[in-house]
Image 1: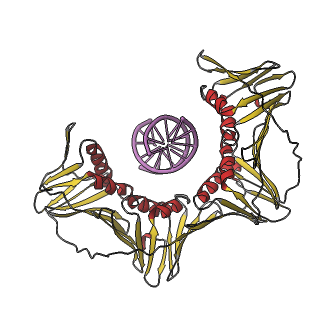
Image 2: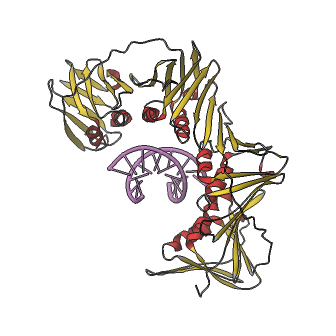
Image 3: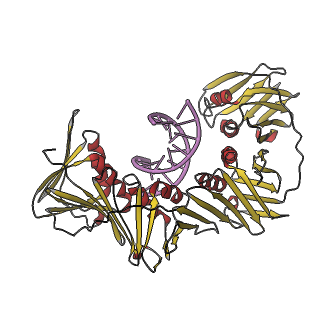
Length: 257
Length: 257
DNA sequence: CTCGTTTATC
DNA sequence: GATAAACGAG
């Protein structure tokens, strides 16, 4: 039996809205530690990895592992039926054929209850090892979103160059070229505005903006994004939750492509 | 001669926008008491009944009864030509072949004048008797709109169950089921947030969400909606105006359908 | 299906 | 106040 109560329905709403454009069907795997999702996008280029730690919930109980195979578009429709600051409780039996969402208004007695039919979904669960990356940057997620949006008007590719004391985003296209350079900085009053760079090796990687556009949908989940890049292995884009994370793994474009 | 001046053009605009999707052609019947409309939708399932009482107007004069047969789509187009807080004066002769709309900006000297050709429209004016209903509920119109919209993503039918101390809205569909339960409440600070139930008999009625979707277009006319339901007779959905009302009569679906 | 308007959020 | 998502209209 799963019973997980969110203090704010908006958290699950943001999570689902963040990944529903990359992935259509996925399994929510519930264990005592929380809820995880792992899925690849339709083109099998972008890997999405989500962990909602049990500390995110105001109440959480999951006796044994339960897998909820959901259609994210239908799931999103139902989540939109709740108010953003309703309590939201997810309920499922041990071998469920449906999951129940209960929304409770904090100010009145309105209780909305929705059940969603589940699906059997094949999943190839990949064990992803923690690894060392050549460069790790941390920056305001909203700035990363704006840079990517701006540059996507020029090109289909985003080049990221990281050196010890600068981050350069570049796009070159038919109509023109653009670049944005950031310097590391520490903002004491607004730490979420800080930009940090940790460097083992300088990197110069290029990514498809089509996929980056899906990644930045996670912006609302965290003030900051952590980007870990190595030359010639998939990069990691991470939005941290209060407990858990939403991670995207995206392989860079290689020059010979 | 009819001459009716609205303090705000937006009121007539809201009224017309509220019914133009249900009804294409209708007669505006003008008398000394104000303006009334009665019409059925194309499928003859939904009955619309409107009264704009003369107190709604800042100036109103109508010496003898005048019937204005209008095409609501054309009427709506013209009303959109005025500013929302323009004065709007409706003018018609005693046996008119057109109606004139005069918009006056409150802040400048702009005066816009439009005339709309009238049509001869057959109408079967039904005398609707006030009757007692099994249940009468009053609730925030915007909440009713949201509940109906939410549940319409699941099903084509909306079931409403009313008991002494609760109102339950339900929809069952292929992808899942949904229900919303409201409890009566009195909000002293925001009386428009109150929910009341008056019950002679508990009711359990089902309506086509297709028609409900047209009904909730009236939401902007009033903070509250009054819904009067009896088992096995048409239900009444009412948005009250400052003086007058917009009412929809809709027969429930019966189980044998 | 795309556009403009409206609403909610930051 | 500005921006971004949601809704309704063409």
